[in-house]
Image (cartoon, rainbow, N blue to C red; front, side):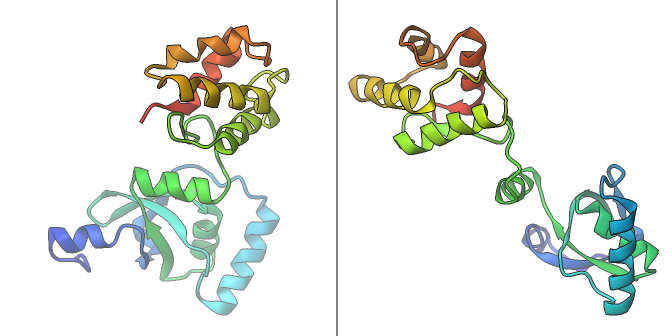
Length: 188
């Protein structure tokens, strides 16, 4: 029997930390945390009988959950024979925010609103691509961001194709880099 009874109450559990029976939560994949660390967590959980950092889970069906983050904590809780583990139930939107807050951006999570972002926000996004080797090391984030702001002040950027001008202004943007930039910008 679920602890929530109506559809409205069902949506209230998203984003909140609740205790779930360890038997109801399965890992989506094997933890990448070293076994020695999991052993240490297991010892702590045996002593404290609670986790403080929540396991991030999706509800896959009623009373069945899939752990997608902090799987090592779930593994340790099961090893410690705990009855329940503290979890945060998420949907795709909340999971995206959790990943961003953890600093785990990637091209699928990083989105810059090209028509409203500040020059600094655009420069930082382009710097992120460069520093994480997601694009050419030749890109000049400051020069490209300034050019986008100048172009935007003259006319709205209506499509991602409108960014082709970056290839012509010697800011380190070629076709491959332009494709990567187009993946992280949004027109909305």
